[in-house]
Image (cartoon, rainbow, N blue to C red; front, side):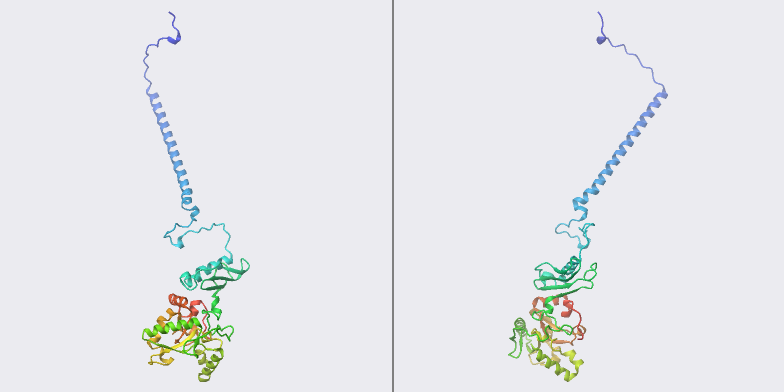
Length: 359
């Protein structure tokens, strides 16, 4: 039978001769070298993966929290406003003078008058500036309690420095907020209120809103056992002129200017001021009124009815007049409450107006 290669029987087992020791050592060294190379490759790959992961985290985490840390904190966040990162890109254009002026008014002056909690109240419209976009010459903004008027500082990089801010109504004698002093005469100087009502017979009258508030204050004072009376309320321009000249004749011009206003510069001429005295009989003169319980009560409680003691003790350099605990001025309940809340000693201080020691 012929045998093909496909069915050829396997050759018998042939024993291998042992390899020399030198060959075995060489093979072992080669295998060890190969293992070291493998370990180095694994170390390199692990390190590369770690680097990639770290880089990915550096890029991804800020994006998740708010790209470039620019998004606002979530509602209820306790992060202080000063530590919150800015959302303005570094490539954003510089704000214009109008932007700076508006921001200054919003943060500095509305806060001064306690925003919506105070007399100024909420804004009823946006700020409006005249002049160019980068150099507004006059800006205004209306609020529920008045209109702010301001002129931005010349240096737009330091908003508020050198600029002026005022409440428009402090210049308007027809409003309850008009501020009259030796530097701020009435305009016109012969101003007279359109409507006056009696507060103590036909000889003593005030504007309706002030008269109503005075009646409420007198009622409360009487209930507290400290009755008050009206000594002098509204004085027309001609009457104030006679009063002032009487002081000049009696005490000289310098002393008269410390105790009596010139015509056109008097709060009595506004119909919003009144001199009050003790009605109990213990003190019927201005000279002793400051030591009465009535004076203390008025100083402590007048704000509740919209009045402030206009010429307080120690503020002569600001008001221009000696201490007059009897002279109270109606400004309305909200303003009077704000004057008290802010700790302002005078209306000049409260409204940010300059002192008026002399004419």
